[in-house]
Length: 232
Image 1 (cartoon, rainbow, N blue to C red):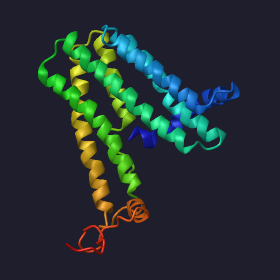
Image 2 (image 1 turned 180 degrees about the horizontal axis):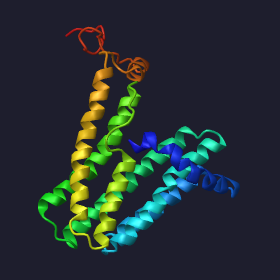
Image 3 (image 1 turned 90 degrees about the vertical axis):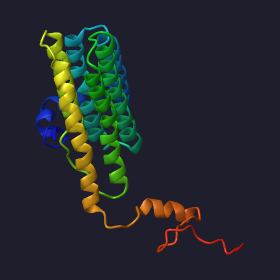
Image 4 (image 1 turned 30 degrees about the vertical axis):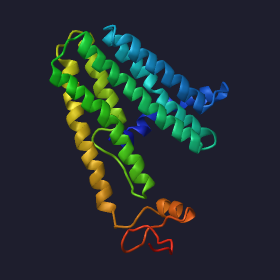
């Protein structure tokens, strides 16, 4: 939800920083990679060592790089296909590092109940699936807009949880993970429902074009591969 409605308010802060980075000669891709590496380091170093509050603060600050690089691309030449692919890939990596570190903390530091660890695993997996469903749906020609728990919500709830836990609030991490687990599963269903509502029964155009180029187009009525003209 915030990815749709929160961009304009954030632009007031992000755009001046993006312009300063461009003026300094930095490219959007460099900012993407640097932000990713720093965010991963924060997650895998601070969270397992029980520095939860500072992990939340630092992760929140560097998560802003995800908006800065996109704004830089828009202000310069509109971005590139590779830049968009790199940015999406780095988002998946940083999400995985964050929730993997939280799960590590649950198991080895907090000695949490197995059900809470399971909730963390649900969040870890579903965070990747949510993004995949959107990407695959858009590749199939569907319009995939919004969702209950997208990346901004996931980061805010997760980081608030570990931050409050770091300040001594009991069960803050556990509560945030259960909220995210339920919301993420709902979002997967929500996006699949979006795709299903737009499905007219046709096959994706890019798949048909690919198979035609390789001579593997299936029969339009039976779905069987084309006959080679040779019978047994």
